[in-house]
Image (cartoon, rainbow, N blue to C red):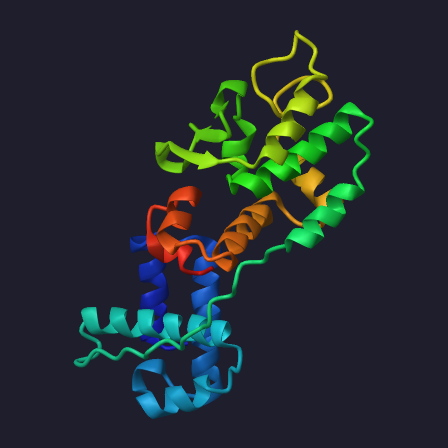
Amino acid sequence: MSNELEAYLEYISITKALSKKSIEAYKSDLTLVENVLSKSLIDLDSKSVLNYIITYTNKRTLNRKLSSINSFFDFCHKSQFLEDKTKFQLSKVPKLLPKFLTFDEIKNALKRIDRTTWIGLRDYALILFLYATGTRISECLFLKREDIQDEWLYVRHAKGDKERIVPIAKIAITAINEYVKEFDKTYEEFIWLNYKGNQLSRISAYKITQKYLGVSPHVLRHSYATSLISGGADLRVVQELLGHASLITTQIY
């Protein structure tokens, strides 16, 4: 290991106070370059580094290596070990489209729910509600009866405390009403409850969607957004319905 690399590792450990895991990752990336090329990193020219780095075909792995090298050279420049600052351009990684379910996939899953039981009515209503409103699971679990008024949902526990109003399909309202009829008067104020009558937890909600759909509750939010875009909805309208702070977040759909 070169003296400059030792100084860099000491810098990120003491001055930057990075985690042990991060330090080990930087050390692994950078020592590997020196060992493979049998030369101190600071003495390597850009062409040599690039010839080595392009052997990584996975772009995410490639970018991690480049990021480590860039961080090292930035340190060397600031520490006056290098006169010129060297920085390598990261490779463009295509964004993965969010996973979503089609309407038919959701409809077929709903048919398999036994609605003769209270739990079945809840599971059916919960899945319909998530797909019909696109709410985050954290928003959903705090739903109260007064939050649904005249086919409109008032999302009061939104991310960043930004309340919004979302239209809700009649079929979802009907499912919720059928489920709510089974409530005991001693149950607490929240709509989504576990078998003990307490507020449903995130892990329980995850188990419900996983059981019938094989996905997390958040995939139903993606499914809602995808169905709106496919139906010709304006992107900014979808942004408002989802409660995204930036249009850039919505553009992935």
